[in-house]
Amino acid sequence: MLFAAESRTMGKVFVNIGLSLDGYMAPDGMTIENWERPEHKNWGAKWGSLMAWIINQQYFRDNLKLGPGGETGVVNDMLRKTTERIGANIMGKRMFDQGARSWPEEAPFHTPVYVLTHEKREAWVRPGGTTFYFVNDGPERALELARESAGARDVRIAGGADVVQQYLNLGVVEELEIALAPVLFCGGRRLFENLGEGVSQFRIDKVVDGPHATHLRYVRK
Amino acid sequence: MLFAAESRTMGKVFVNIGLSLDGYMAPDGMTIENWERPEHKNWGAKWGSLMAWIINQQYFRDNLKLGPGGETGVVNDMLRKTTERIGANIMGKRMFDQGARSWPEEAPFHTPVYVLTHEKREAWVRPGGTTFYFVNDGPERALELARESAGARDVRIAGGADVVQQYLNLGVVEELEIALAPVLFCGGRRLFENLGEGVSQFRIDKVVDGPHATHLRYVRK
Image (cartoon, rainbow over all chains, first blue to last red; front, side, top):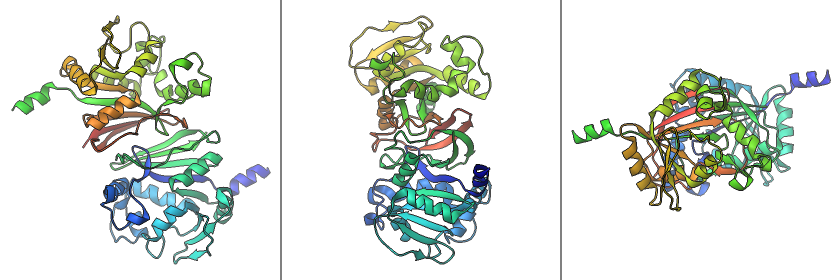
């Protein structure tokens, strides 16, 4: 009974990321040092191809303050549902640093966000419900904190690649959602590497076939 | 007019392979030395997961002499159509060596098969229309020979990973068909690596959503 009660009140842990066909979460050359030079190793165009499926979705545009309009079909609905189920996000320091230079003042999470880092820093409160907490005690502690804030809602592992790898290796990822874009980066930050025996296996749960990405959803076996 | 005439008579070059979710064509430990020890690094079970979508298809079972019966739905139809369009296959020496220990006497290709190798060897004729030719002059020459034998039919790049990479780098791959199985190998022979500037980009052409694999079809842009 205790177990049943717990499973009613505890959310899922899920990964939701974009991936190039050749398995990279970010192209070579996409670093803070080259943030203002998207022509460096052509990273800007490559990143654009990865984001092509999302950039014109109404929900995404609204959330990122990119202006009115946008598509409102199946993919947009999926995007809204995914965002609404999230009670807390977890991300790495690199993703945070890059995002901090790109997100609008009202950061697009509207939940607590736990940033895995060695840096000690006070919580950073943004308008619109996003607060960044900087966690120095490793991925398990960050997940504990994220679960606590999320309550019955779900915890999303947002990236980057090394953070996803850490949680896959802990075997705690229950759902794996990948927007697979038909672009070859030929280098960059790989999602699937450094994986070992702790990794769970998954089954196919759902596939949504869009023109700019294939949305693959897997559930832990 | 010459171009139009040529494009009517010349087949396509396409890749058709199985891939683990984490991007491997074969698991770690799956080598000729360990062929009789599928428990070595658990390669047999991993390979089984990769092949789960195909092993019960009627067309595949019939072709590999695995016995009667099998599924006859959308995936089976796709498998038949794919096989029937092939006028010649190209593969690497490792794939050939492993296959030579596994295929029935009537090898399952029923076309000329060009094997990229440094080994000098006479053509090996099998019953049922498969003849293996051993090509020592590199991937471009193998493709030339394969195109000649295929005529208006298509040339399939069958694998392994290094052979697919060579043809991707030559920019000659027009269609890329991947059966993406929901298994994490955590190591093995990666499909997408060693790729450089010669690589083409692709668009999504079709997705077939099966229970044991997602069938992704891409066409060169």
